Amino acid sequence: MRITFAPWGETLAELADAARRAELAGAEVVWVPELHRSATVSAAALAQATTTAQVGTAITLAFTRSPMVTALEALDLDELSGGRFILGLGTGVQRLNEDWHNARWGKPVGHLRETVRNIRHLVAGATTGRPIDLVGEFEPMRIRGYERPYPVQRTEIPIYLAAMGPAMTRLAARVADGWISHELCSPSYLSERILPEIEAGLAQVEGRRREDLELVVSACCSVDADPAKALDRVRGHVGFYASVRTYADFFEFHGLGEAQQRVVDAFRGGQGAEHLAAVVSPELVDAVTLNGDRDRVLDQLSAYHDIADAVKLSAPTHGLSPAEIRAGQDEVIDLIQTITGGRP
Image 1 (cartoon, rainbow, N blue to C red):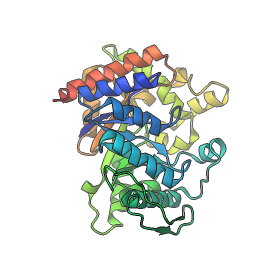
Image 2: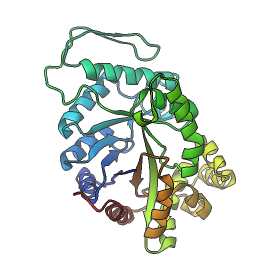
Image 3: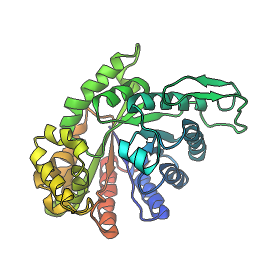
Image 4: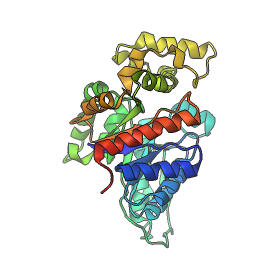
């Protein structure tokens, strides 16, 4: 199981430094999200700060850029990183796309399928001058007379898809090089809900095998010699996600529907999503995060062996001060060093 990492930084310089330290500690991939920063600009900063780790987006929003812009950014990032880039794509939710970005939502599974198809075509043929004529309900692409005048690092860049629901998970298994979990994903949820859909998706494509798809599970990780402090540090992070009713099925799966509802009620009562730690129960935290002293976290992490190909570790961020996030991140980077022994 590959150990990968999602760094945090209050500035791009700090983000790059955290990625560099994680690479030295043995992280094989460093990932950047898209919410408070552009994923592609952040990835560029990490590409220049690292030398051996792959650099991935987890995730770039798929519908807020045209597939052509996304493909060109992927080619540029692959050049900048020397062939180390992974394009992670996700749909986001309808409200984010339509209200925040004025972007078309459509039917997300079909829309994302066409988006991936177009990106692959553009990346494969950008320097050839060959015409592209792709029909589609959401992303038709018709290009004539275009030829990228620069050499490319690769004509195939890995595309990973973030997915949580059954239909999107099956799509990832059919068309992607990797699947990326939601930020909260327990071993039991991965095993019982995700893997059956992965297998169903793979079975829909002749010749497609399980080893053709890398499964990347995200694990929010809070490590401290004082287990109570580790748990408290991650409460706000869990509260942020538990405030979203879209994830009701996820929490119900763990038998924590009532615990989630208390968080939702507090949020609707005016408590900000970043300040919900007080209503998050220890049971809720334990079900969906890695937390405790180093030995306990290592034991929790071992539950992903044999069901995930890689784990994306990250420190909690929601509801914490920058100093608290830094302390938690340093602990996670030290944990990576313990697991891997550091970069050779």
